Length: 198
Image 1 (cartoon, rainbow, N blue to C red):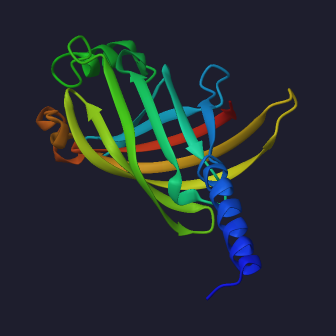
Image 2 (cartoon, rainbow, N blue to C red):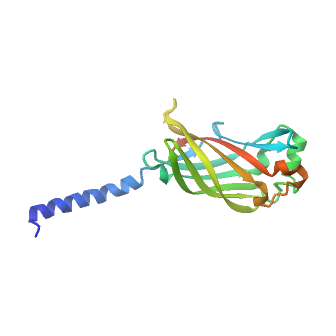
């Protein structure tokens, strides 16, 4: 049978651990993606006839992410993209891509990404899994993520930065690329995300 002093000690340790648990669970910081300061980018590359590439970007998007360097498996992210902000540097081409031939931005003006989990694959690297809604269709995707760095900024804030890559099969989102040829069936996405701790 435990002595009273030992019982008090065990109880005290248990209560102390319980008090620390919520702090540990809440240690992941929330960050706002700094798209307004032009420190975040969503870019894409798609084949042009198999001879070259069309490069472009989505200029307007907002989002947040949660990150704790000591528990990266708890990372999460949420992003909302204005599809009509697409820019490939050619106005007529942009108009065509945004038409109902492809993205149909008038009917589907927004694309969203909501993460569902993160798996570390190495020091500062991992796979961010989630659901992408594009062209009115939601599909699971995986983004290969690498931590660029984090720390204080010159304005009294604290930042974290990441880059990510993924390849989307456009037919999975109901986008018909047959007019562009078989080499345009996929699009490579490159993301740079810098967040300000809230």
